Length: 315
Ligand SMILES: NC(=O)C1=CN([C@@H]2O[C@H](COP(=O)(O)OP(=O)(O)OC[C@H]3O[C@@H](n4cnc5c(N)ncnc54)[C@H](OP(=O)(O)O)[C@@H]3O)[C@@H](O)[C@H]2O)C=CC1
Ligand SMILES: Nc1nc(=O)c2c([nH]1)NC[C@@H]1CN(c3ccc(C(=O)N[C@@H](CCC(=O)O)C(=O)O)cc3)C=[N+]21
Ligand SMILES: [Mg+2]
Image (cartoon, rainbow, N blue to C red; front, side, top):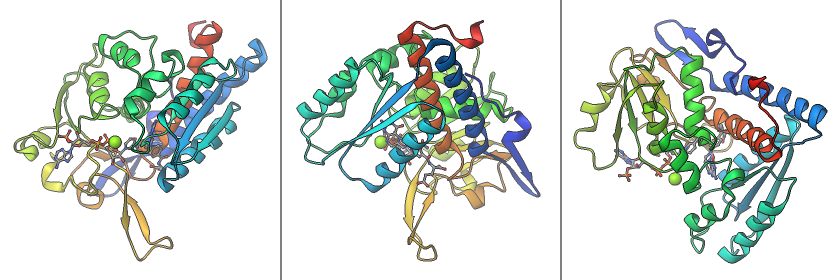
């Protein structure tokens, strides 16, 4: 599904500093397209896409994300539900809930919010989700399809959202040097897979905590993608002048000047890097909103595929 916003909507130019890539605006466009498609599926096929999110425990950050997912799925006309389970839930109990959702015809997308309490093995839960309802695209079947270029699987929401942002911002990727910092299964690795796929054709370097002389790599990047999990880790000296910087990081830090006493920062030192880069995503309002928009888009596709309905784009 393509986003609604045009390249000019996606970027905001400011004097003497990088363009802002407005993820919140691009995400609104994607959600508008999702809502149109949901309306079509309801009207023409009596099909209401449904997303079920399972939240185990009471991590406050997870609670915020999960609330946004439910709210935005309902706003797009979908059936959205959140199943809340106590922190003491056993793996067996969680797998039983996943099995019930696997079998429920009204449920097209299943997401089990990470992280899980320590008595539960995340890999076991991910394998328990039907691959054709795995809208997170964490199941090995979807990971494998992504790597071998089979298009009927799902692309993981965060890296897929980054790809849409790069496209909307008009960032050239063919032959470009792209450096991804981070090699997690949910961000860094699938990000690299999407960027190197034929047709996109970026030259991808993946860095991690054992990388020798990280800055030597990041300074070569035309496009730098930070998915590290350390607040303001990427400093101005690590960025090539004119580079495009995508900040996946979401780190809550203490800030006594705010009402809540905390503040969200990315993995990039935004204020300093902004004067070196040509374009940059903010946190919040960058990659985060795209993740949820892509989740909704994946859920609509899951509903279509499970019901055997053709893509409107294919007509
Ligand atoms: N916006 C969104 O929608 C989402 C945002 N996030 C955010 O993105 C960030 C990354 O998430 P995630 O991938 O799950 O995190 P992980 O902790 O799973 O992975 C972090 C990666 O960064 C690497 N790393 C850590 N320290 C350094 C260092 N000093 N130098 C170089 N590399 C380093 C690690 O290397 P190694 O493998 O060697 O340990 C690892 O590969 C977090 O801030 C998270 O909150 C995550 C998911 C969605
Ligand atoms: N199974 C699973 N799938 C996930 O996709 C998943 C997960 N578990 N666990 C946690 C991470 C993180 N994540 C985010 C989603 C939206 C925002 C988001 O909307 N951020 C807003 C701000 C939110 C705020 O203000 O706190 C923004 O950046 O503008 C952030 C982070 C999905 N994750
Ligand atoms: Mg993680």
